[in-house]
Image (tube, rainbow, N blue to C red; front, side, top):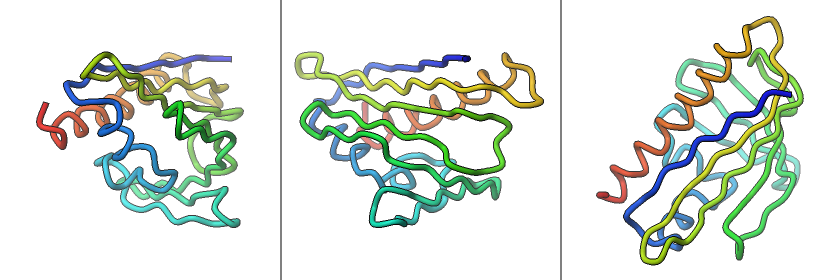
Length: 136
């Protein structure tokens, strides 16, 4: 199993960051590479379309608004991986915060380091946009 974790410190309170990222269907609101997210299956699944046209169906595995974290898995899609499970967490750091996106997966037909780098860049682009949105 391959693991990737990207985190960044933000000069905004955890509550403010969580208001932006904490909604299960909020990904297109803060991530520039995500065009749409449509809730399905009573709210436990979302159909995500990326800017490059790739479509992914993700399933919410665990949500804890108080702890500011949620975990999801990829049910289907065209990404070259399997057993994908990911967690987004916002942590309080005094008046600032840290956001972390951690993932485990198995690559399929693509070198592990190439896929890891692709995911790291995807996560970081979301964090960079959050920083702009928050003015930090």
